[in-house]
Structures are given as structure tokens and as C-alpha cells.
Length: 316
Image (cartoon, rainbow, N blue to C red; front, side):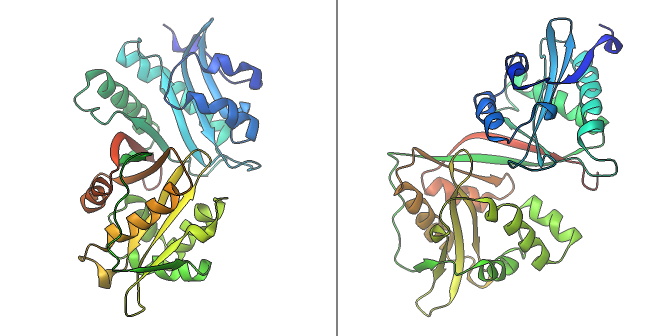
């Protein structure tokens, strides 16, 4: 197949969604609602066509009303193609789309893909990851982190609170940022470590708040600070809803109180708040190297149902 003969283009309008859906991915069922709510735009959804056959696709996501997308979360190639051909077609499509979507001189949004928990043992899943990795590294990105995707399901016994901590709502943005700054010390989170290479802990905490927490429309009264019997903050937990699920958005134990199992108390509090809302599931994620956090989720009844792998153009 001559790559030069492919048609590379964005969707003409939302009515072409069925064309985009000719290749599969686990988030396909969210696309129609995303388009309706303004999180997707036809000009952010690209396909590579060979006649009436879609061979590759890519799409970006952004907050409703945003001028530019902030996340790159769809990138698929027809996996019936020979691996080398799949890489060539994927690279041509992605390069063409990035030239249009990303302003000149700007860093492209990070790419994230959900993958099976056992992808290394599954030959088909491993090939899918390897194909995307080859395309992305050719275009200047690098693998950043692999994450566990975790889920607590309704009917799972709730973790029992130990009674060691009292809980109160987070007072305001300033208090939460003040708590986040020391929590970043020694963090195992790849994104936070990357931020700390480029900015102060105060700036990194503010960025995290403004780019994630401030966008949640769920009640901020859910956000909790865990306080010791002496009245000292021990840590905090941010239960919330994003556009799709109830989530544990963030959990942190202050350095002076680490090693005492307070992560279990904080996670029990956050899980209990969301479960009390009658949600069918609670989602969370943690970086693969963060073994202590993964173990805490397991103790609280969360299961690892999937993984995610992220690629970044930052410092590539």
C-alpha cells in the first residue's frame, strides 16, 4: 500500500462519527456524548483513509469551550496491517494532525492509552502497545509512565475506619495547596516529579489544583483533611466526580506522618463519601512503581481492572 495515496483529514462534522468508529477502542461509547458536550470537535478527530477503509484514527479531548485540546487519548491503527506498515500509516496520520492541531512551537498534549492489565503476556495487546510506541517515539515522544487503573465496585465491603483520625472539609484552595507542597516531597508520581523538575513545589501544587481540582463540579465539601488527636493535619483525600466516574482524585500523607498506615484511614474516608452517594463504582489510578499506594487500594477492596501507559513530548 502506498502511504502517499492515503487521504488524511479531520472529520467533516459530527455526523461522520460512524466513520471514526470503524476502528475500535474501549472509550468509543463516550465519543457521542463528548461531541455533544463540546469535549470533542470534528476538527480534533482525524482519520487516514484508503478508499472506503479507515486505516488509522486519532482524536484529542478538551474542556468544553477550550480553544485547544489538553489531552490526546485516541490513536488507533488497523491491527490487521503488517506491523511495519501500521507504524508508517500511524506516523503519517499523527504527524499531519499534529501540524494542524498543535500551535507552532507548542508541546503536544500527552498521549494516554488504556491497555489490558496482562498486556505483556498477551501477544496481541503487546503488539498494539509496541506499534503505538514506535510511532510516538518516531515523532519525538517518549514513554513516561505506566499506571494501574483501579476500581471499587458497589457491594464491595467498605474499609472500616480505624477511628485514629478526625475528618473535616478542606477550608479553601490556599489550605489544600499548603498541604500538597510537603506531600510532593519524595513523591513516586511521575507527573509530579516532572513538574518539580521545571517549577517550585508551590507552583506545581497550584498547577495541579487549577488544572484538575478546580474543574470538578462535584461538591468541594467532599474533600477531607485527616486530623490527629492532637489537632494536627496528617493528610488529605480528594473524592470527586469527573465527567465520567466517581474518583479518588488525590490522596496524600504529610511526610512527618508517613509509615503509620494513615493512607488506609484517608482512603477509607474518601471511599465512604463516594459510596454514600450510591455510585456504581469508584475509579482511581496510581503509578506502577508506587507499590505502597497500590497495596493500600487493594486493602480497601479496589481491583486492578486495567492499566494505562502515558507518553510525553516534554523533555523528550
